[in-house]
Image (cartoon, rainbow, N blue to C red; front, top):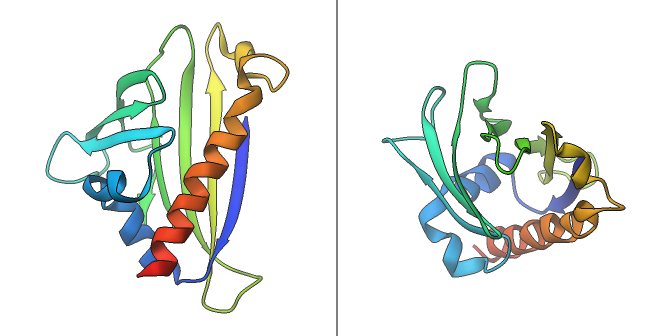
Length: 144
């Protein structure tokens, strides 16, 4: 599992609004997330999102077991090269900065080849890539 956090000096609803503005990502992030695009009118439960991350392209589904709530956006990706990921973004009220947000960005892996995502194998660089997205999101949100 990859688990990263960052403190953002804006309210959770503002952070979530910027996060869900997928079409603006290229204005503020050029790292691991190339594109997230809802394949229907909104990223609601049961709908799919098209994702381009690093060198992978896939369509993930937001199901009733996953969440798309004011506090969390989550999808289950399909198996890609024997690895499936449950990707979670949480927008929690900060316990560090009044009125701020603790942004949690994590992914849990499953599948026959998921062991490759261990930090001592292929997954060693992933936390840094997640942190890069988090820093870019923080910079964008706090600049508005």
